[in-house]
Image 1: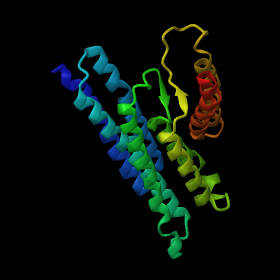
Image 2: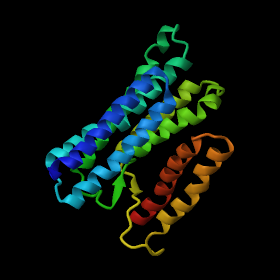
Image 3: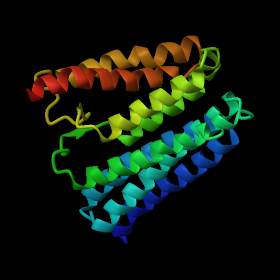
Amino acid sequence: MKKHIPNTITCCNLISGCIATYFGFTGAFELALLFIVLGAVFDFFDGMVARLLHVSSPIGKELDSLADDITFGFAPSAILFTWIGDNVALSEPVFIIFPFLAFIMAAFSALRLAKFNLDERQALGFIGLPTPANALFWGALIVGGSDWLSDIPMAPFVVLLALFISSYLLVSEIPMFALKFKTWGWKGNEVKYIFLLTSIPMLLLPLILLRSVIGLAAVIAWYVILSVCTQRKNAQ
């Protein structure tokens, strides 16, 4: 019986992603982000439970990747598809294809997950941007920053450029740290503690002062910048 518990949690992740995708297509971006976050919670616990119960299995690994691509690849793509469609003059024939470019992210998310399954270098850290971080960035950016994004000239083009950059980051060879602690001391964990301590005000201040989740997008962007600045230096 216990061998089915992790896969059940993974399926909850997948279902959360399906619901998030629905809300993304209908323009209910806040609810879409909520279910992406819920999916991330399930994604965190399925692997932990599998290790605790000693019931890890190949089918669980494959199911986890499938669920992750729905929740962290297809769902944020649905959000972007709807947002771009709402902010582009679709009457112009050349722009009709623009919303569909959002699904590039779903494809690159699948490539990133397949690469992760085969890459033995990612036990203690990541190579490339993790799909949950990418999904949370886009969900928070659209939910928290949609109003000011719409005021930017050529905003859909800016968003598409950022989409291409984040898709590249998913499959890049850039080392990125994971919040895994072997010990709780400062030495050896400096980057992780700096990230956590600086992320708290970045997340909470916009939430308290502006009632906006845009801080979550800022935290993910800071994670990428900090990883690029520190992990590559460590690798040299």
